[in-house]
Amino acid sequence: MGKWSQGYALDLHTVSSVFLGHDQYGHAHYDNTYSEVGQLLFRLKYRSNQSGVEELAEAAERFVKAWNPGADIIVPVPPSNQRAIQPVFVLAEAISKRLGIPVVYCITTTRKTTQLKNAYGLDERLKLLDGLHEVDTSATQDKKILLFDDLYRSGATMNAITTALYEQGKAAEVFALAITRTRSNQ
Image (cartoon, one colour):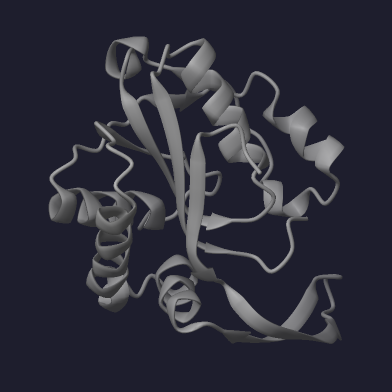
């Protein structure tokens, strides 16, 4: 449960995962079976394959239209990892075009931090997120916001940004949407 009014993920990211062992650098490796949506997102996020963007945007469009949160703007969660193609931005723009709701890049980070996926404890994630995000109030005040991320893990980042949107950004209401979520909220 998050600090947002309502929040959803379209699907699970993986439906099964088998631990294969550690590589020579100590990184764990898994044999993952992805949901259909999870596979499309995996290819976009980790292989820079944009062939599934329109299919993912269409699924998000159908869901948001049925849900109807009444959002004025879409605010993508800033990515923690620099990539040539930023999946969260690519998807937010594609969803924006389909829904006619503008994407507003109003969240900035105050410092560099490690990727949260490498922080396994909730307390460790919360410490990394403390004071990390700033909001451009001129873009968010009195707005109903659809906070968007591609992959939801623990909700720590979206909760921190939701707090910033309410406290700094004076948002009227925040709704959360992710394309996929992990099977556990760890």
